[in-house]
Image (cartoon, rainbow, N blue to C red; front, side, top):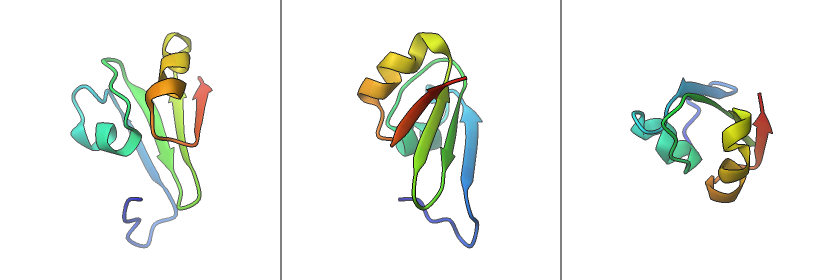
Length: 67
C-alpha cells in the first residue's frame, strides 16, 4: 500500500507503459492512458472498454470499471 503522507487518496492518470509508478501501483501494463484511484481502503482502475477484461485479469486492484 502506498504512503498517503497525510492525504486521503492518490490519483494517477497516465499510460503504465511510460509511468513506472502507475505500473507499480496497478500491476497493469497498458500503452494507453487510464485512471488509477487509491484510498487506504480500496484501489480502483478506470479503463477504456477494450482493456477492461484484461485489466480485471492482470491488475492488482480491487475494482476495474469502464469509463
